[in-house]
Image (tube, rainbow, N blue to C red):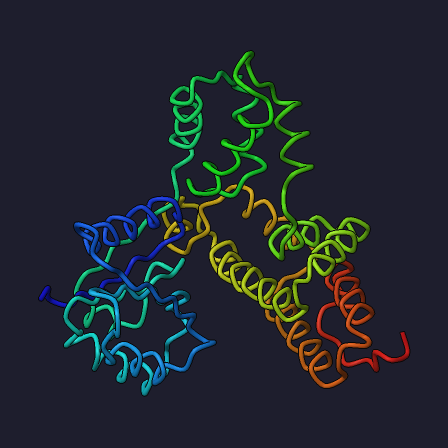
Length: 326
Protein backbone atom coordinates (compact mmCIF):
# COMPACT_ATOMS: atom_id res chain seq x y z
CA UNK A 1 0.00 0.00 0.00
CA UNK A 2 1.33 3.45 -0.92
CA UNK A 3 1.33 6.20 1.65
CA UNK A 4 -1.37 8.85 1.27
CA UNK A 5 -0.36 12.22 -0.17
CA UNK A 6 -1.67 15.80 0.15
CA UNK A 7 -0.37 18.88 -1.67
CA UNK A 8 -1.26 22.43 -2.70
CA UNK A 9 -0.86 23.51 -6.33
CA UNK A 10 -1.39 27.25 -6.44
CA UNK A 11 -0.99 30.23 -8.76
CA UNK A 12 -2.50 31.41 -12.05
CA UNK A 13 -0.42 29.37 -14.54
CA UNK A 14 -2.92 26.67 -15.50
CA UNK A 15 -0.91 24.74 -18.10
CA UNK A 16 2.04 23.82 -15.88
CA UNK A 17 -0.33 23.13 -13.00
CA UNK A 18 -2.29 20.63 -15.08
CA UNK A 19 0.96 18.96 -16.14
CA UNK A 20 1.92 18.54 -12.47
CA UNK A 21 -1.49 16.99 -11.73
CA UNK A 22 -1.00 14.71 -14.73
CA UNK A 23 2.38 13.56 -13.38
CA UNK A 24 0.75 12.50 -10.10
CA UNK A 25 -2.08 10.81 -11.98
CA UNK A 26 0.34 8.77 -14.10
CA UNK A 27 2.42 7.72 -11.10
CA UNK A 28 -0.68 6.56 -9.25
CA UNK A 29 -1.92 4.56 -12.20
CA UNK A 30 1.38 2.74 -12.47
CA UNK A 31 1.05 -0.34 -14.62
CA UNK A 32 -2.63 -0.37 -15.57
CA UNK A 33 -3.65 0.34 -11.98
CA UNK A 34 -7.34 1.22 -11.57
CA UNK A 35 -7.56 4.86 -10.52
CA UNK A 36 -10.71 6.59 -9.31
CA UNK A 37 -10.73 10.39 -9.75
CA UNK A 38 -13.07 12.81 -7.96
CA UNK A 39 -13.34 16.60 -8.25
CA UNK A 40 -14.65 18.79 -5.42
CA UNK A 41 -15.48 22.50 -5.72
CA UNK A 42 -15.04 24.47 -2.52
CA UNK A 43 -18.15 26.48 -1.80
CA UNK A 44 -20.38 23.92 -3.52
CA UNK A 45 -19.57 20.71 -1.61
CA UNK A 46 -19.57 21.00 2.22
CA UNK A 47 -16.19 20.19 3.76
CA UNK A 48 -17.70 17.55 6.04
CA UNK A 49 -19.03 15.74 2.94
CA UNK A 50 -15.59 15.95 1.31
CA UNK A 51 -13.88 14.48 4.38
CA UNK A 52 -16.45 11.71 4.66
CA UNK A 53 -15.81 10.69 1.03
CA UNK A 54 -12.03 10.95 1.48
CA UNK A 55 -12.11 8.65 4.49
CA UNK A 56 -14.34 6.03 2.88
CA UNK A 57 -12.48 3.41 0.90
CA UNK A 58 -13.05 2.81 -2.81
CA UNK A 59 -15.16 -0.20 -3.79
CA UNK A 60 -13.44 -1.02 -7.07
CA UNK A 61 -10.42 1.27 -7.58
CA UNK A 62 -6.94 0.47 -6.33
CA UNK A 63 -6.01 4.14 -5.94
CA UNK A 64 -7.91 7.40 -5.61
CA UNK A 65 -7.10 10.95 -6.74
CA UNK A 66 -9.07 13.90 -5.36
CA UNK A 67 -8.88 17.42 -6.81
CA UNK A 68 -10.22 20.19 -4.58
CA UNK A 69 -10.71 23.28 -6.75
CA UNK A 70 -11.13 26.89 -5.52
CA UNK A 71 -9.45 25.84 -2.29
CA UNK A 72 -8.94 29.48 -1.30
CA UNK A 73 -12.66 29.54 -0.36
CA UNK A 74 -12.04 27.23 2.59
CA UNK A 75 -11.49 29.80 5.31
CA UNK A 76 -13.64 29.24 8.39
CA UNK A 77 -11.98 27.80 11.46
CA UNK A 78 -14.22 24.72 11.56
CA UNK A 79 -13.75 23.93 7.85
CA UNK A 80 -9.98 24.29 8.05
CA UNK A 81 -9.76 22.19 11.22
CA UNK A 82 -11.89 19.41 9.73
CA UNK A 83 -9.97 19.22 6.45
CA UNK A 84 -6.63 19.39 8.27
CA UNK A 85 -7.69 16.45 10.44
CA UNK A 86 -7.80 14.35 7.26
CA UNK A 87 -4.72 15.83 5.62
CA UNK A 88 -2.55 15.06 8.64
CA UNK A 89 -3.33 11.35 8.21
CA UNK A 90 -4.43 10.77 4.60
CA UNK A 91 -5.79 7.42 3.48
CA UNK A 92 -3.40 5.01 1.81
CA UNK A 93 -3.24 4.92 -1.99
CA UNK A 94 -5.00 8.31 -2.00
CA UNK A 95 -3.83 11.73 -3.16
CA UNK A 96 -5.59 15.00 -2.37
CA UNK A 97 -4.53 18.06 -4.41
CA UNK A 98 -5.78 21.48 -3.33
CA UNK A 99 -5.98 23.77 -6.38
CA UNK A 100 -6.28 27.55 -6.48
CA UNK A 101 -5.38 30.50 -8.70
CA UNK A 102 -4.34 32.35 -5.55
CA UNK A 103 -0.75 32.23 -4.34
CA UNK A 104 -1.63 31.14 -0.79
CA UNK A 105 -4.27 29.31 1.22
CA UNK A 106 -5.11 29.25 4.89
CA UNK A 107 -1.82 28.64 6.71
CA UNK A 108 -3.28 25.62 8.48
CA UNK A 109 -4.09 23.94 5.18
CA UNK A 110 -0.64 24.66 3.76
CA UNK A 111 1.04 23.27 6.86
CA UNK A 112 -1.11 20.12 6.88
CA UNK A 113 -0.44 19.50 3.19
CA UNK A 114 3.31 19.80 3.60
CA UNK A 115 3.88 20.10 -0.15
CA UNK A 116 3.21 23.45 -1.83
CA UNK A 117 4.00 24.61 -5.34
CA UNK A 118 3.15 27.98 -6.88
CA UNK A 119 2.80 28.17 -10.65
CA UNK A 120 3.38 31.75 -11.81
CA UNK A 121 2.24 33.18 -15.13
CA UNK A 122 4.85 33.53 -17.84
CA UNK A 123 6.85 36.74 -17.73
CA UNK A 124 6.41 39.04 -20.72
CA UNK A 125 9.78 38.11 -22.25
CA UNK A 126 8.92 34.38 -22.10
CA UNK A 127 5.41 34.47 -23.56
CA UNK A 128 6.42 35.35 -27.12
CA UNK A 129 9.13 32.68 -27.13
CA UNK A 130 6.69 30.09 -25.77
CA UNK A 131 4.27 30.78 -28.65
CA UNK A 132 7.04 30.82 -31.26
CA UNK A 133 8.41 27.50 -29.93
CA UNK A 134 4.96 25.92 -30.02
CA UNK A 135 4.52 26.75 -33.72
CA UNK A 136 8.05 25.55 -34.54
CA UNK A 137 7.41 22.20 -32.86
CA UNK A 138 4.25 21.83 -34.93
CA UNK A 139 6.14 22.61 -38.15
CA UNK A 140 4.24 25.85 -38.66
CA UNK A 141 5.39 29.43 -39.29
CA UNK A 142 3.93 32.57 -37.74
CA UNK A 143 4.92 36.23 -38.04
CA UNK A 144 6.02 38.33 -35.07
CA UNK A 145 2.88 40.43 -35.48
CA UNK A 146 0.83 37.22 -35.41
CA UNK A 147 2.45 36.23 -32.11
CA UNK A 148 1.74 39.68 -30.63
CA UNK A 149 -1.92 39.40 -31.67
CA UNK A 150 -2.25 35.99 -30.00
CA UNK A 151 -0.82 37.39 -26.77
CA UNK A 152 -3.30 40.26 -26.88
CA UNK A 153 -6.34 38.03 -27.44
CA UNK A 154 -5.55 34.93 -25.35
CA UNK A 155 -5.50 34.54 -21.59
CA UNK A 156 -1.98 34.48 -20.10
CA UNK A 157 -1.56 30.82 -19.23
CA UNK A 158 0.02 28.07 -21.27
CA UNK A 159 -3.10 25.89 -21.30
CA UNK A 160 -5.16 28.63 -22.97
CA UNK A 161 -2.29 29.48 -25.33
CA UNK A 162 -1.88 25.82 -26.31
CA UNK A 163 -5.58 25.42 -27.06
CA UNK A 164 -5.83 28.56 -29.19
CA UNK A 165 -2.55 27.97 -31.05
CA UNK A 166 -3.65 24.40 -31.85
CA UNK A 167 -6.95 25.74 -33.12
CA UNK A 168 -5.19 28.23 -35.39
CA UNK A 169 -2.99 25.53 -36.90
CA UNK A 170 -6.02 23.30 -37.50
CA UNK A 171 -7.91 26.11 -39.23
CA UNK A 172 -5.11 27.76 -41.21
CA UNK A 173 -2.76 24.86 -41.96
CA UNK A 174 1.02 24.80 -42.27
CA UNK A 175 1.60 25.73 -45.90
CA UNK A 176 2.35 29.44 -45.28
CA UNK A 177 3.16 31.83 -42.42
CA UNK A 178 0.24 32.86 -40.24
CA UNK A 179 -0.25 36.64 -40.17
CA UNK A 180 -1.77 38.96 -37.56
CA UNK A 181 -4.97 39.67 -39.53
CA UNK A 182 -5.75 35.94 -39.78
CA UNK A 183 -5.09 35.42 -36.08
CA UNK A 184 -7.49 38.22 -35.15
CA UNK A 185 -10.16 36.98 -37.56
CA UNK A 186 -10.09 33.36 -36.41
CA UNK A 187 -9.66 33.88 -32.68
CA UNK A 188 -12.29 36.62 -32.52
CA UNK A 189 -14.89 34.53 -34.36
CA UNK A 190 -14.21 31.15 -32.76
CA UNK A 191 -13.70 32.27 -29.18
CA UNK A 192 -16.33 30.94 -26.78
CA UNK A 193 -18.07 33.64 -24.81
CA UNK A 194 -17.90 33.43 -21.03
CA UNK A 195 -18.23 35.58 -17.93
CA UNK A 196 -14.59 36.56 -18.50
CA UNK A 197 -15.13 37.87 -22.04
CA UNK A 198 -18.26 39.60 -20.73
CA UNK A 199 -16.14 41.30 -18.07
CA UNK A 200 -13.77 42.58 -20.77
CA UNK A 201 -16.70 44.13 -22.66
CA UNK A 202 -17.97 45.73 -19.44
CA UNK A 203 -14.51 47.08 -18.68
CA UNK A 204 -14.33 48.62 -22.15
CA UNK A 205 -17.65 50.36 -21.52
CA UNK A 206 -19.20 48.84 -24.66
CA UNK A 207 -22.87 48.30 -23.82
CA UNK A 208 -23.88 46.81 -27.18
CA UNK A 209 -21.17 44.14 -27.17
CA UNK A 210 -21.74 43.47 -23.47
CA UNK A 211 -25.41 42.71 -24.07
CA UNK A 212 -24.59 40.60 -27.15
CA UNK A 213 -22.04 38.62 -25.14
CA UNK A 214 -24.47 38.13 -22.26
CA UNK A 215 -27.18 36.76 -24.57
CA UNK A 216 -24.68 34.46 -26.29
CA UNK A 217 -23.75 33.02 -22.90
CA UNK A 218 -27.35 32.60 -21.77
CA UNK A 219 -28.21 31.14 -25.19
CA UNK A 220 -25.61 28.42 -24.59
CA UNK A 221 -27.70 27.33 -21.56
CA UNK A 222 -25.34 28.83 -19.00
CA UNK A 223 -27.31 29.81 -15.90
CA UNK A 224 -27.49 33.46 -14.76
CA UNK A 225 -26.04 32.36 -11.41
CA UNK A 226 -22.97 30.94 -13.16
CA UNK A 227 -22.51 34.24 -15.01
CA UNK A 228 -22.83 36.16 -11.75
CA UNK A 229 -20.29 33.84 -10.14
CA UNK A 230 -17.78 34.49 -12.92
CA UNK A 231 -18.33 38.25 -12.76
CA UNK A 232 -17.92 38.15 -8.98
CA UNK A 233 -14.54 36.43 -9.40
CA UNK A 234 -13.45 39.06 -11.95
CA UNK A 235 -14.48 41.98 -9.76
CA UNK A 236 -12.67 40.48 -6.78
CA UNK A 237 -9.54 40.43 -8.93
CA UNK A 238 -10.31 44.04 -9.86
CA UNK A 239 -10.40 44.83 -6.12
CA UNK A 240 -6.94 43.27 -5.71
CA UNK A 241 -5.70 45.35 -8.66
CA UNK A 242 -7.09 48.56 -7.17
CA UNK A 243 -5.35 47.85 -3.87
CA UNK A 244 -1.98 47.64 -5.61
CA UNK A 245 -2.58 50.45 -8.10
CA UNK A 246 -3.84 52.86 -5.45
CA UNK A 247 -0.79 52.06 -3.32
CA UNK A 248 1.45 53.01 -6.24
CA UNK A 249 2.87 49.49 -6.67
CA UNK A 250 4.70 49.05 -9.98
CA UNK A 251 6.69 45.90 -9.31
CA UNK A 252 5.63 43.25 -11.86
CA UNK A 253 6.30 40.44 -9.39
CA UNK A 254 3.88 41.93 -6.85
CA UNK A 255 1.11 41.79 -9.44
CA UNK A 256 2.00 38.21 -10.34
CA UNK A 257 1.85 37.19 -6.67
CA UNK A 258 -1.81 38.25 -6.65
CA UNK A 259 -2.53 36.43 -9.91
CA UNK A 260 -2.61 39.73 -11.82
CA UNK A 261 0.22 39.11 -14.26
CA UNK A 262 -1.90 39.11 -17.42
CA UNK A 263 -1.34 42.32 -19.39
CA UNK A 264 -4.79 42.01 -20.99
CA UNK A 265 -6.54 41.62 -17.63
CA UNK A 266 -4.68 44.60 -16.23
CA UNK A 267 -5.70 46.66 -19.26
CA UNK A 268 -9.31 45.72 -18.48
CA UNK A 269 -8.86 46.74 -14.85
CA UNK A 270 -7.23 50.05 -15.82
CA UNK A 271 -10.14 50.84 -18.14
CA UNK A 272 -12.69 49.94 -15.47
CA UNK A 273 -10.85 52.03 -12.90
CA UNK A 274 -11.77 55.15 -14.85
CA UNK A 275 -15.44 54.56 -13.93
CA UNK A 276 -15.14 52.76 -10.61
CA UNK A 277 -12.89 53.59 -7.67
CA UNK A 278 -14.22 50.69 -5.60
CA UNK A 279 -14.81 47.10 -6.68
CA UNK A 280 -17.09 46.67 -3.66
CA UNK A 281 -19.61 48.90 -5.45
CA UNK A 282 -19.83 46.37 -8.30
CA UNK A 283 -19.79 43.34 -6.02
CA UNK A 284 -22.67 44.74 -3.97
CA UNK A 285 -24.65 45.36 -7.16
CA UNK A 286 -24.07 41.78 -8.39
CA UNK A 287 -25.09 40.40 -4.98
CA UNK A 288 -28.28 42.52 -5.06
CA UNK A 289 -29.26 41.16 -8.46
CA UNK A 290 -28.43 37.61 -7.38
CA UNK A 291 -31.00 37.96 -4.60
CA UNK A 292 -33.57 39.37 -7.04
CA UNK A 293 -33.01 36.52 -9.51
CA UNK A 294 -33.41 33.87 -6.84
CA UNK A 295 -36.52 35.45 -5.35
CA UNK A 296 -38.43 36.24 -8.55
CA UNK A 297 -37.99 32.98 -10.45
CA UNK A 298 -36.95 32.44 -14.06
CA UNK A 299 -39.49 34.64 -15.88
CA UNK A 300 -37.67 38.02 -15.56
CA UNK A 301 -34.13 36.57 -15.75
CA UNK A 302 -33.21 38.07 -19.12
CA UNK A 303 -34.56 41.53 -18.22
CA UNK A 304 -32.77 41.56 -14.88
CA UNK A 305 -29.47 40.45 -16.39
CA UNK A 306 -29.75 43.16 -19.08
CA UNK A 307 -30.40 45.74 -16.37
CA UNK A 308 -27.41 44.54 -14.37
CA UNK A 309 -25.10 44.87 -17.39
CA UNK A 310 -26.50 48.33 -18.12
CA UNK A 311 -25.67 49.45 -14.60
CA UNK A 312 -22.18 47.91 -14.62
CA UNK A 313 -21.26 49.38 -18.00
CA UNK A 314 -22.67 52.83 -17.21
CA UNK A 315 -20.82 52.97 -13.90
CA UNK A 316 -23.96 53.43 -11.84
CA UNK A 317 -22.79 50.83 -9.38
CA UNK A 318 -24.74 49.70 -6.36
CA UNK A 319 -27.91 51.70 -6.01
CA UNK A 320 -31.10 51.11 -4.11
CA UNK A 321 -33.55 52.51 -6.64
CA UNK A 322 -36.66 50.48 -7.14
CA UNK A 323 -35.57 48.53 -10.21
CA UNK A 324 -39.17 47.85 -11.25
CA UNK A 325 -39.49 51.46 -12.37
CA UNK A 326 -36.76 51.17 -15.01
